[in-house]
Image (cartoon, rainbow, N blue to C red):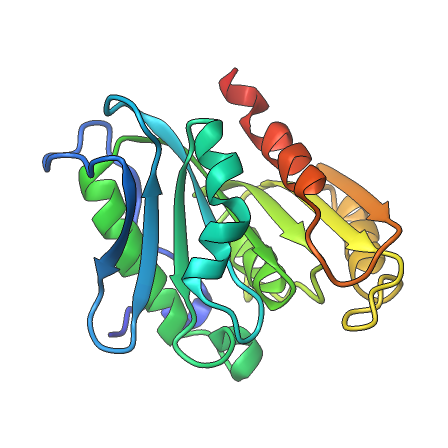
Length: 226
């Protein structure tokens, strides 16, 4: 699976006003994306209607199911869809050597979702390596992602910058995996200085995602939807 813009981190899939295919029913399902490619989609309960979509990237060695376990319930409780891809290798292509395969898989997953679900807005989110990936792809696709929700990120290296998504970053002051001073704190300062709308939260703790931070990040993003 390859796309012309994958190596540049650019995503081609876009929501459409009136998807032609029938919407997915409520619940969690695995999308069919071909060998070695997987993503899970969570649709809230209730009648089909236009909804915001959170794309969430797991940490190194993680899975789509872990992402769903982390953000699926709080996001769907706010009537948001959740798309949770799995990295093809142990971590995301950007961390493992260069953008390409995982970007193409994500684009294919988004195409499937947009073909059946009316989507009102998109946010990227992630934890650890997944947070670094969300920031990197979000900054490169700010014409698609209106917000990036990054929990304990290590870095952001977008090949290019497009648009101005809102940024949420949280990081533990006792993080021994990705130390706060050279990771979350530095990133928040650099992005704020670069003109992005940044919300930054430090907490007493390690390399974890706290439920309260998930709720606060979702509120920051979904506040625009009432």
